[in-house]
Image (cartoon, rainbow, N blue to C red; front, side):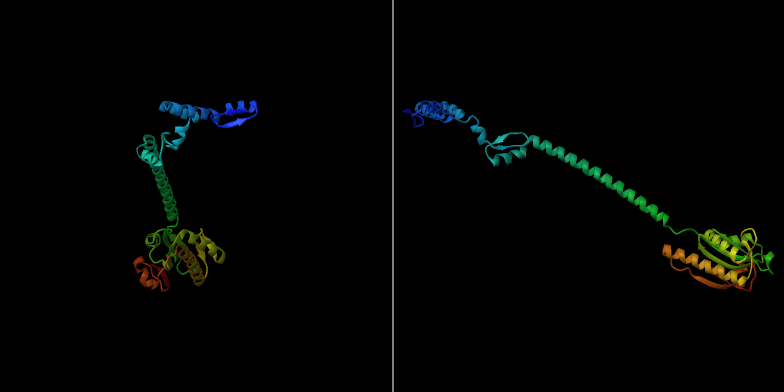
Length: 262
């Protein structure tokens, strides 16, 4: 029978007893009992270290993740975070990084805003109402007494083209203010060419004056209405006036009635 006085166990097998003597439990009990009998504090510390070399470190389990310092309590760790230099350095770097990010984002947003405003301005510019001018149907003084007439236009909304371009005594059958008069003139010349007789250049036609008047007015109304609808422009005010009154300033005479857009 084999007995271990330190661990208070017995064994009938010498092999098992020898294995027991090599265990950590046996060695620990031997050290504790020996120290207890000698009552030495330094020996106790040695024994504690022998029993568990990482005992003190295992007690310290509150570790600062920034500087790796270990603390016995969570409260000590919380206080440490306030003065941890590495943490403060990281926070400062984080602030600077955040500040730079905010600056870059602000610049990017400003660039996007400027780009959007540019696009809006470009679109707004494209949507600005087109230029206005006048379109007219006249009978030059040298053609009075015939069934020959002329179509013309001016890019200005004044009667300067009529006063300076035609001789005194010419009949101004119809003068209208409209958007992009050159486009309307092109449409009128194309239609007049098929409905009436082209007698000179691209603007002189012969035919029934009433039909010419009617065609002229119809195309003007369609052209003007299309622009009004697209650009949301209020209807143009039309005033009827007698040619003899209206054209007195032009030095022309007529007994017909004309529509003048103002």
